[in-house]
Image (cartoon, rainbow, N blue to C red; front, side, top):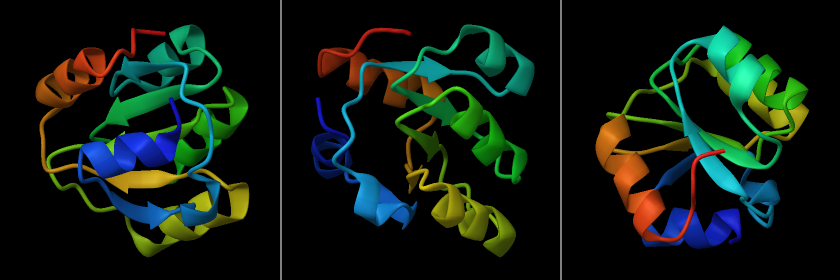
Length: 113
């Protein structure tokens, strides 16, 4: 499934990486621990988190993730958005909590990564 389809279906707001929404999403991973994501998320996964600092971008690049969704309307700071743009990582915002967002993604046919 294309990231752009998920953005449209779940009414996600794009904060960075709008030119890279054509990526294929292979699954989803929900975690707020960077070390957990580094150890367990699969390439192409969409990462669900409430973390908003620059380090999330570095982890997404290292793991070749499709993008990052910040839950509960959490807003990244300007430096995080700049870093996401530089690294071509889509940074998205959802009003939903992690549990509800994960459930909706599962309902759309994505599995855990």
